[in-house]
Amino acid sequence: MDKDIIISMQEELARAIKRPAKERRWLMVIDQRKCVGCYACTISCVAENKLPPGVVYRPVLEDEVGTYPRVSRKFLPRPCMQCDRPPCTNVCPVGATEKGAEGVVTIDYKQCIGCRYCVTACPYGARTFDFGEAYTDGTPEGLPAMVGQARAGAMERSASFEYGRSWPRKGDDSPVGNVRKCHFCLHRLAQGMLPACVSTCIGRATYFGDANDAGSTVARLEGSPNATRLKEDLGTEPRVIYLV
Image (tube, rainbow, N blue to C red; front, side):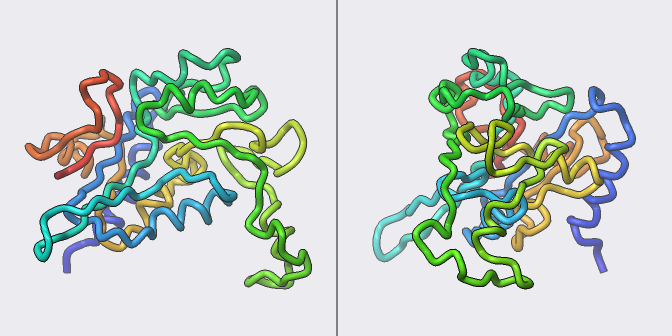
């Protein structure tokens, strides 16, 4: 039996994280031909990062093509492009967003002042603002959660783990009142785990790895004749590639 691609990418990741960060080039490849629009990636991202209402790191855009009765739908998962020339970083007046050594664009919640200049600057709509809302707003706080004996409100407002540390949902040291975005699940990568969206893709349509590793899955797919990037004409040099 052939090895599942998830297992192969996990092994490639274990190989990659042994090298210095500056020697890695994280790349995500999304095969639109395999995406079925199940939203498993979107939901797993919400669960992994405890995203509140209005904050989404990996939406799936839909488009209807054809003419009735011969119609079909296309799906476009759209995480942050992690551009090599990100327009969002230059407009930040306080230097709260930057491109790290691993090539992932990050946000410092302690530094961000919530001006949202970066939201406007991003040509991909990959950034959203955290208004501090909760799904349980307007509902009885005593409503029991689906897990354990915890209360739903308490579970929602518990700290999330991003960028290698825990972030509470209150106070100045919080993502509330700041801009948020996909970060390729850096906290998972540090532990040798693939991004949540990759692990949960039922169609095996999302690939991830180090493109500097010539033997990796993403290095092979990067050179595919049907590989393309969104809005390449803008010169942002995205690290997310689509197979169409």
